[in-house]
Length: 119
Image 1 (cartoon, rainbow, N blue to C red):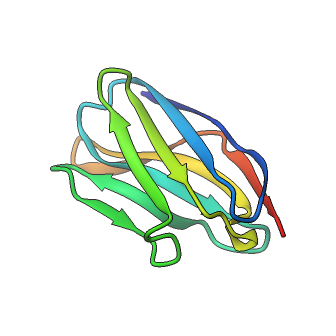
Image 2 (cartoon, rainbow, N blue to C red; image 1 turned 30 degrees about the horizontal axis):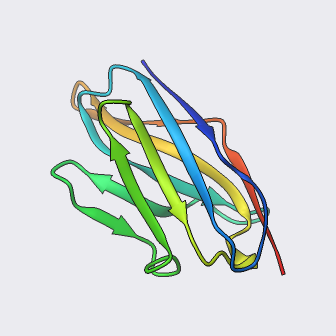
């Protein structure tokens, strides 16, 4: 089992910055990818940024150049540095680990952390 705990959300003015953290516990040694998703009210959950096994980083077009994902393997923590925040970034942000259970990929999610950007 993998457990994820996010922190770092809050209220910030447009143009400001926040850093989200996700602490991973349990066996994530077979992870295919770790990353961040977000979901606004009435919208589907969408990928924000992810680190794919091997080190490739993927970003949503809407956050490229503003958000940076990183991972500290020693601390089993994944970060999302968010700069130049915009009101449209307001969402609940979820940490995600995807890994194989046998031959089936399984998604693990944190409880989510609210990010609110005021104009």
